[in-house]
Amino acid sequence: MRRRDFLRRAGLLATAGSAGCILPDQRGPEVHHPVTPMGAMPGARGQAGYIWAGAAHVDITPPEGAPVWLAGYGFQRPMQRVHDPISARAVYLDDGTRQVALVVADVVGLLHNSTQRIRRLIGPGVQTVVASTHNHQSPDTMGYWGPSILHALPVQTGMDAAYQRVLERRMAQAVAKAAWSARPAQLAVTRAPVVPGAVRNLRDPDDVPKTMLVAELRTRSSHETIATIVNFACHPETLGPRARLLSADFPGPLADEVQAQRGGTCVFVNGALGGMLTPNLDDDADLPERLAFVNTLGRSVGRAAAEAIADVPARPVAAVGYWAAPIELASGNAMYRYIERRGLIEARARGPKGGWLTEAGCLQMGPMHWAVMPGEPTPAAGRMMQDTLRAGGAQFAGVIGLGNDELGYLLTPTQFDEPGFSYEVSVSPGREAVPLLRASLESTQRKRGSDGG
Ligand SMILES: [Zn+2]
Image (cartoon, rainbow, N blue to C red; front, side):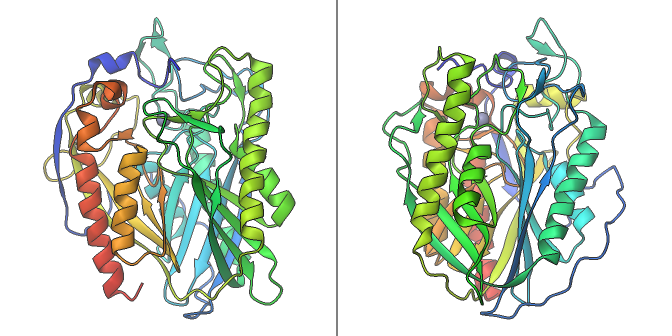
């Protein structure tokens, strides 16, 4: 597939190579837009082995007729109309010691600045992981995809500040809703088969994940579903670059299918989707075929997830938590420097070496551990992170892509030198990113272990 993904053309500006370092624990980057805290969050109610859990879903669809630049492909792609709504979905867990939340929006990506503002709205009591499905039919929530010269050189941000404030507030509200709805809960986890032929890998056709992780929170007394988390890796780009429809893409029908079968709230979280997992659809498919495939893909993945988890018993959960390590990535990527200097994206917080600050972390829900990665890991990079989690004692090891930040493609050092990955290299934070993220994940594992996680 000839991707016209974001900044491909401007990628000509890019130069590869970077250096960075893992920082000691410190406060997160400064945020320049103070926000009003929301109402109080509930305090701890769970106990070790007797967690409380809740889930919620909020609408984040911009109003029909709103001036929206759609994100994910070329610049300056205006929304024509809303085809189907987009959502933010949250799950909240409380083990009496720690309260954690995962909130995922049907958008292309959120920078660390947005993550920090959402966390401030929620307050310090809940360790929150903010992620995006990487939906390519959603408003520009980062700033890359606005007006441009000849569709080649972006000159103005595509992010609507007013929409962004509403989005961040609603994501925080989803976490609050999930927290207030929490009940005593248990967790079931399994691996489910991915429907053969649903997804293809444009770089290495043989490297397509055969399974996905499914985790389900159920009430302790009646075993009702609270939330089903489906962790599957694929670019939500079924509708393609010519579509000007706002849509949730395949994660929409995926969630509908899981909720129809299991009840509760389905939270889809993308995995190691970079370089380059995409829906298995012909490049020349027209819009009606693409709309049909959105449904086929979403429903078939949702059905496989729901069927696999149905007979898995839920068990008490000993501990939940999120452990993160801040990282400085001194990106040598000229394109990134250009877009930041032009004010297309918000200025990022910088570390002592002048590089971009971000974070890597481990989100734990009992036996289920996720490596939370600030971008789009390739399947190979994802496996490195899963190995790290298993070495740290994870029974089930997953990867959350676009977690807390979106820095582009996260390639292994070997892939960085392969010509087949030249596009991904041009939209990457550098060769050192994955080794640093891995080292950082190892440090969070040690911290988790000493905290009793
Ligand atoms: Zn992507």
